[in-house]
Length: 178
Image 1 (cartoon, rainbow, N blue to C red):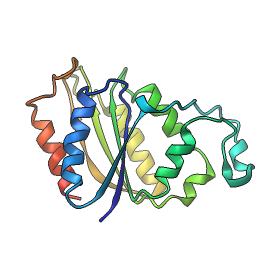
Image 2: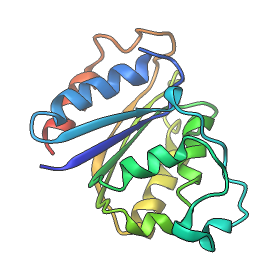
Image 3: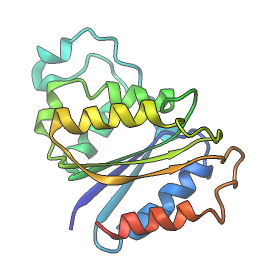
Image 4: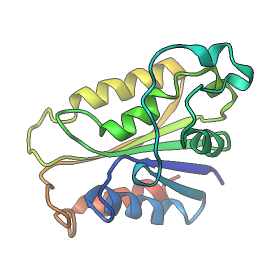
């Protein structure tokens, strides 16, 4: 049994990304502990690159925001799943702020061994997810993480567009495979 944290980058409650995450979570929860962290519920400032966390006690960031709560949750995670709508060929800005705030030595205390990726985009372009997939691969390589897999969904724009999409089953099966 693994502890899985899903970082959801959508500000839309019950949007397409959330529905995809729910399918994945339903599958994963059969054999794992699953916790969903939605950017819509937290106020996290972007990293300013000052590197003060490298010198502060406990590697704490000087910014007093909700990232402290997310660090605590990540501390016990074995698997992290990044789930985001795709805006202009990248993950959401709110999710990117969280990812960037992991530029801290504190991450060395985490026990994360595996990473997954769930993406939803409105466009139908074949290369829509390529920039994010490149970052994903670089993170896997740099941190020596294992990929649990990806679910990439094109052509879903408005809330509910993902309903009856085969990607929901694919996400469920990916979660159940863990």
